[in-house]
Image (tube, rainbow, N blue to C red; front, side, top):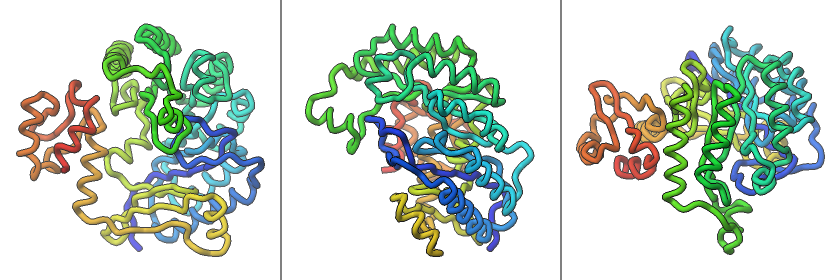
Length: 375
């Protein structure tokens, strides 16, 4: 089959030491993982996709989870080597690994660098121990700072995540914490507002009135505004709703998603978008780890491939692309201009000759904007 020229590769490691109470990702707590078995299964999947997409050039590899920093460096190395063997790995490929900042995981950083990882994304989440405990994290603030220092010695690029609008957090608390984070001179920050998802421990507690201290809408909006102001002034403007970077330090892998590019997803629950013989396919892998690996070892494909309709491709491109500060090409919305008029009158959307983008006023209201455009 003919394939698209350039792809990203997403590798999902589904295992964690503990389930965070706010997390709705496909993650599983297990006592032991047979790393050699899992490495072989991931390699087998890469080889299967390599046969389906010959000649592709891999621009990025992203190890997500779960907690990929629980992978042995040898497992990571096996995956990267397989991708390089079955495809062409770009000379400047961005290879990212998500990591928790515990001391045990930080001790693996040198091994990951030797394996080929050149960018790490640390799940710091908070810079004080009280809130880290509330969030169910296994590290403390000192451990997080140590992990950041170790990461900087190992990798060319280091990003870290923080969650705001946490329980009992005030605007001044957040301003002080963000100022501390920016003082560490990062080139990339992911700053997420805490959302309470059904099916999580936090969702269950909220349903039973046992999650006190969450900020109201006005305070959360003020925290958003402070976040945009402080990151912009520090030279890390938002290039996506929750992601901030110095120019040139954006996550190249995530930009593939937001710009509607092609990527292979392997691992339990992984999603992908691939172009084969002129048809774009959405792929979704089996979510349960035991079933996923059993299917691979029995020679079955562990994912479902669905041919996407042109209307589905366009809708997804709009939904993902409007998350970016650059917006999307105006040509994609030529059939939606009537709906855009009211949004431009409200100064929520800006329409130029070449682009449509949400304004600074509209970006925190993006879900409402998308409903207006697409429904």
